[in-house]
Image (tube, rainbow, N blue to C red):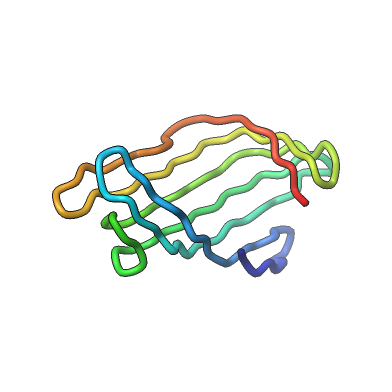
Amino acid sequence: MGYNFNLGPFLMTLGGKAVYLNPKDGDEGYAIAAGGGAELPLGQYFTLFGEGYYSPDSMSSGVEDYVEANAGVRLNVLPSLNIEAGYRYIDMAGKDGNRDNTLADGAYAGVNFRF
């Protein structure tokens, strides 16, 4: 959930997300992460994008902190359908002696449908 606004050619987003956490090595919990992103259209069909979210210990349960970052390129097939490829990093820092859990750290590709 976020607030969108234009800044020159960029579409900027500020907002947050609620995340349920169930790490392999740690306690079940949640994170309320604040963050945002930017999109830069490259013509009619392509968009460069990046986003990041962070939740400190005070806004999470079961982890020390939560970090999520995502960047890539998106092909807009239809107004509600796109294909994207990029790099994703998601990490949960362990708390109370539990190990850190990195959920994603590498390239990805996928399809999005927005409604």
